[in-house]
Length: 265
Image 1 (spheres, rainbow, N blue to C red):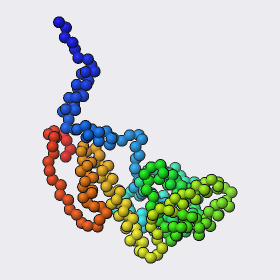
Image 2: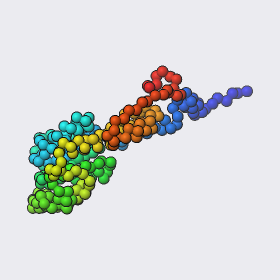
Image 3: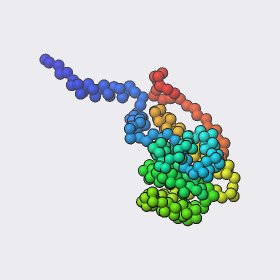
Image 4: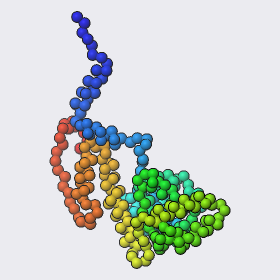
């Protein structure tokens, strides 16, 4: 009597089943691992913050102080090199930096709108804010938010100069106006000399570090450790990152279901 041999497909299924049975990973853990693996379509964050500013107004003052403080907090900041401003059009390097940033801090100042470079940069920021989760933080540095939003005051003078320039297309000017209206309507910081700039810089840095950068870094760094995501999120909620309180958290316990000595703990 001939013995029926199992098909190759059956052997394959049994092998996969044995591998699953031997592993300590649940189906939920396998799903987490699969979803955390990088893909070609997944955005790769390279910078926490992109700074948009008019070098003539703030490069060696407010912007430099903000940049130094953010860097000191371990926040990854992109600030263009001074030599880049010699060009007329926004460079590919800057466009890529905007696309790879979590935050865009736009520092509106007296001469910001006179710079075609700044306005093209702003339009790119607004475009990527609409395409992905790019958060824009406007800082109105000795200009009123209404000047940016409805383009009056120095912003009106700047746009009038652009409209008189035959080298600037009216469609591009309308794009700049729309970008100013959009960002000018966002909640931000208004610096007008009634508060210490160092205090404002500290508040901005703490907000970025506590509310986004550190929690997301913790979760991102631990995505490949099976079953840890929920624990990290719970720990972050217990820390109350928005509070100024000092908190201590003790973590204790033992592993379950992992008896192999090659599992990282």
